Length: 579
Image 1 (tube, one colour):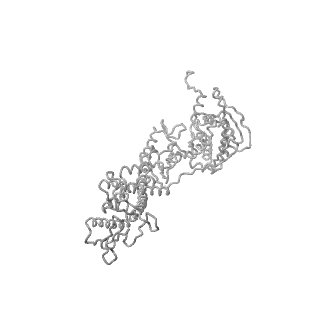
Image 2 (cartoon, one colour; image 1 turned 60 degrees about the horizontal axis):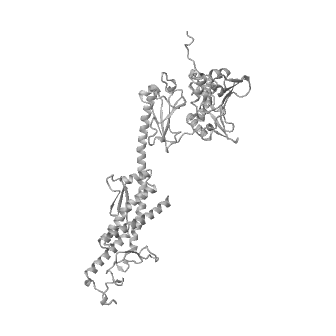
Image 3 (cartoon, helix red, strand yellow; image 1 turned 120 degrees about the vertical axis):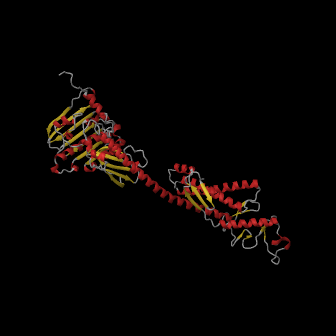
């Protein structure tokens, strides 16, 4: 055999390259924490007769900002590593996990995570372990690796001790940015997402030491989102031959979920391999869904293209045939779930919007009725100018002080009074014998055509004012189609068209919330336009405008603008108060 017939490797470069996969506190905590859990799961597997309680295994993570270090501790009478295991397994880079060799399906695979310490800039890795009364302590220095020296420093070798079995891993001289408060929060979320319900199976404590030396501790727990809906799916036949009788459990939350808890957790023997929404992450309402899918066959798959690789990414191998089937099936299920929910949500929102629009319509109807009733307190003078009639309390703008059909000297119960253009006083149609000078009055039969015409106009005005007091406006919001006007008036019925493009656009600007004050203001203004038209048409029908044709146009324009401004100011003030 040739002396050059085997592979050779730069072990220094292999270690440092492997460390690059652990560039965050979250990844480092994940690695050393799961080492402890994998070790105890192996013990549970090997000693079924002991019925071990996982909570008896003490696991503690200390993040020390004062001394810039991390410390991972696990303690249990059956834990710890012997010298043989320490060197042949723990420090054996890229070797197959010894538990996996025995078909114990733990999370670790190839042992590359032991280098994680150097991924966050640490200068020193210390492993201090006790097993069966023997203690071993090993140090690894980054400066040695950089110098090409891969030797480990054995500080303690098989020293007898009565201390509790277990392992302490210290990572020293960590760069401060990796252990900041933000990094710690991110690490906590990552661990909770990764381990899920396993956090409640173990007693895992996180200790944080601040720069001033103050410490705080908390137990890491798993709190899954609250589900308002759950459905279980069995794989299709082509998929079932790979997965067996597994179940895809789909759950839905009442509210959108944050990114760290949404998605389906695809697990193998309890360890997440990917948390995904099967490519539908950006779909509307997808952020409401979560769930789980336990598929043990991911660990037992045999082939050249495994379902998950040795990288530290929580991601399955999309090129694997099993994974392709998983994603096709999962995507179909989630897509239909989203579609069904979206349809229900649209109906629910439509029902809610109908109720809200009904309240808005009722509110606006009340406003318009109140405004319309003010017409019987607003009088037109003989020359067509509007003036305020006194209120009952002597003020302006209220109801007329006259009653029983009398309005500013015009009787609606009998003869109609005529204004004396010279004196501006009402002249009645009373006959002789009632104290009226015959020279200054005219009988009904003797009225001129002009006087009769003006009296007729005044009578119609009075009838209009009496009708005004009754109000009775109704507002509706309906989908009339996009070719119709924004609003349609039919007498006192005003319909706002929700399909009109300007209204749809404005509603979109208001996040499709019909109760949004800005949308309400816009919808009110559309309805008020129709209301103002109705008022103007009514005044015109009753000959309320006395100007010449050119002047009437100005008078109508002024009336419209004045009326709309008054109403919009009042509504704007009301909406501001309500919001």
